[in-house]
Length: 210
Ligand code: B1M
Image (cartoon, rainbow, N blue to C red):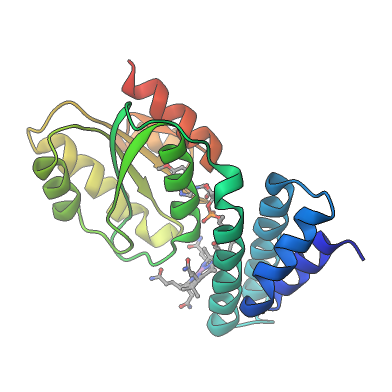
């Protein structure tokens, strides 16, 4: 079996300790970093489907997430460039009530490699914390909100509205995450939406130069 298939299977099985070695072996075998990343994203989709079907539970999702994070650590230098941080500063976080951070971390990585300085507020971030980060760093030109739960879309809406009502200026808000769509982004007053990490970086650049 090709090593990339082993990576996919072992992420799904939550074997975090095996992943760095397997990812390296897959690279050595000639698989691209982008393909290995996609194989791990596919594993998370499978785990999610199994969770929905009641075949696995929260601990298995958590173990798979840890395994994927280990793989991303190995791939990071290959997925990111060496852009000098000159496009501005991006504040990023997963919205309040939501603990999912793998997608947010990938988005952060890609926006950073596009040339932004990143201020990562982590997960379960309330509107006030986003506002304070913009206040405390006067060169923030992008705020990026991630959300994976349908139930936290309300927090995303509230955060966008609070940022817009704060009186602070000079920044644009990008939203994304599996349950988020362009339509929803427009509806909650975000300036931009991106479906994945690569396009989030493109959108951040586009908004920062608008
Ligand atoms: Co959770 N979880 N989870 N989970 N989890 C999902 C999201 C779910 C779809 C699984 C399912 O039921 N099929 C479901 C949500 C259903 C819904 O609301 N629609 C779900 C649920 C229900 C839950 C709990 C409620 C379970 C429970 O406790 N009963 C609970 C909630 C906890 C909380 O947040 N308060 C929970 C907990 C967890 C873990 C903690 C165990 C773990 C997260 C660990 C971690 O992140 N460190 C976890 C995991 C791993 C998942 C799945 C399996 C994988 C998520 C993931 O990392 N995907 C997920 C199922 C799935 O996604 N199919 C699931 C890979 C990642 C690369 O993709 O994050 O989508 P994603 O990011 C993408 C894009 O969305 C986009 O770019 C990325 C790729 O390029 N993107 C952006 C993301 N943010 C962006 C921001 C942007 C632009 C693009 O601009 C700013």
